[in-house]
Image (tube, rainbow, N blue to C red; front, side, top):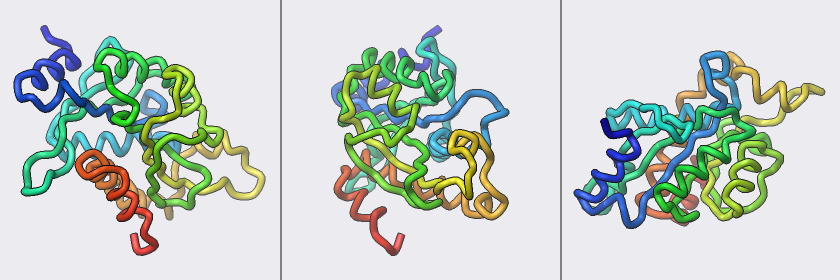
Length: 217
């Protein structure tokens, strides 16, 4: 039986969309139901939403990631957007680099086609920002990915979770669930971030930044 990754490669070869310039979209988080609602897992929430929109399910693979084959966004004229592989590492956050590097190597994904979705302490809650390269800002998942890839020059979709209140340890803060007030706005954040990923892969970084970095968004 073909694994999800092999099916993805075969489909790309058949329709001409997935092999030459594949996209890999990774949602960071920790594995298991105990972490599912944590602030640190908001990246995985977005990839779950992207899979839901595409009407597909995640499957397990030997790369230590759950993967789903999708088309993201809409091209000019209404055609389906580029083929992409959504991935959720099944390793813990601070060793995300191993699964991501394995996927990158297997699919020969260039750095400018790797999108990592992650929580960001240095942005206010519900802000969505996009960038290419730069530092990791103390984020252990990004550090692990940069180390495993040997480069920081990949795309990031940064989802604001705000700073911890008072003297609360940031490590405890990211491993706790969103507050009751935040949970009311969380669906909007996840939906906006999914829109940002779709626009990024279909129209490019500059277009996505122009829309989602606007103060009106």
